[in-house]
Length: 105
Image 1 (cartoon, rainbow, N blue to C red):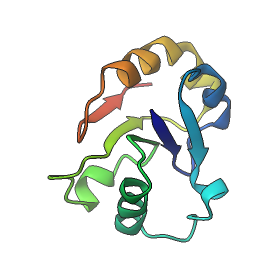
Image 2 (cartoon, helix red, strand yellow; image 1 turned 135 degrees about the vertical axis):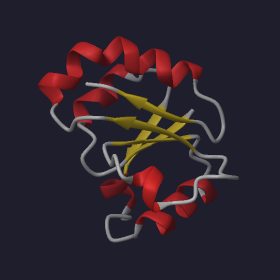
Image 3 (cartoon, helix red, strand yellow; image 1 turned 90 degrees about the vertical axis):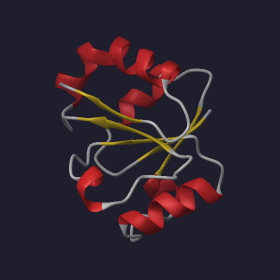
Image 4 (cartoon, helix red, strand yellow; image 1 turned 60 degrees about the vertical axis):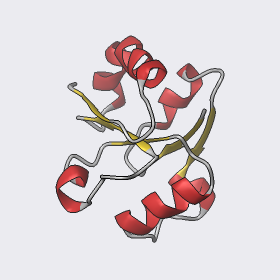
């Protein structure tokens, strides 16, 4: 699956997502896009999942009808996220198109 890391998503998580193609918003040159434009661009470019730490996303955007799945990590801290890597991997493996999932950290 093509996965996009939003700004704030710890890059070290990428090495645990073997078997997936992982890019960052920064690498794609999308850092200046607003959230709606980012979601549109990710879907247009075939991303299946956005991993973000933006806990307000579900309140700021209408996510209905999207094909892009969204996984929200409820922390930006890699030391706090690292012990939950197995939970994150399970969520990634089980997520479907348009799903919205939060991982408590």
